[in-house]
Length: 241
Ligand SMILES: Nc1nc2c(ncn2[C@@H]2O[C@H](COP(=O)(O)OP(=O)(O)O)[C@@H](O)[C@H]2O)c(=O)[nH]1
Ligand SMILES: [Mg+2]
Image 1 (cartoon, rainbow, N blue to C red):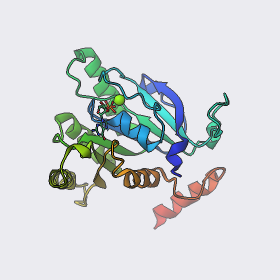
Image 2 (image 1 turned 90 degrees about the vertical axis):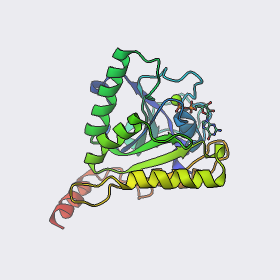
Image 3 (image 1 turned 120 degrees about the vertical axis):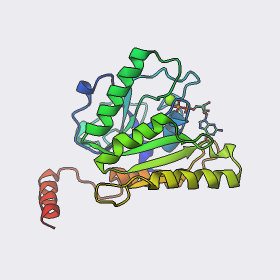
Image 4 (image 1 turned 60 degrees about the vertical axis):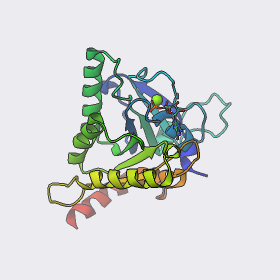
């Protein structure tokens, strides 16, 4: 059973100053409106309505947080999520590129998303959802450009792969990998960007995406709960090495 199945709603944020003070790693899901972001989150977390999959794109202009761990398993129990036991957070970012969003809302989005992905220390990696039938849009590229300097990984999920035949899907994946591979860090080494095909409908690529996200969140490691002092030692060792 995937640990992502434990996900449950944690909080909603409209301004960066309200971001949670949690110290655990978080993975943010970004993508253009209608790319299949909510559907992907729901399938990955094996829940029908965790992230609201709407037929009216552009509605949600806020950041939704889902927690992994720290909650009792029984969904019917109205218990508090135990914040100190949370092991990771999934972050549903507002979808972008929706034509009817007004100028002010667009600016608010740009500031919120740009600042969040560039500055949020707890952000371990970005999952970028791109419709496999559409090339990367300007705003998808914007996300890559914002995030590349952080040196952190991006995992690109090419969604709705069931809409493509085998050949076109393979081409879409190849093109995405070529684009992602063109990003290099200051020392010339490639940015840690990966891509895969995905279909929520057919559940293709589900295992690959789950494993990648669990790894990026550090969920495959033994629990670090209550071991904060050792974590500092480990960091010093890294710097010496
Ligand atoms: N065929 C197909 N449709 C999908 C898939 N994932 C999402 N969709 C559809 O695409 C539309 C937008 O999905 P949604 O998750 O709300 O997109 P979001 O705006 O990025 O959150 C909905 O009508 C979904 O049913 C998929 O894997 N295959
Ligand atoms: Mg959505």
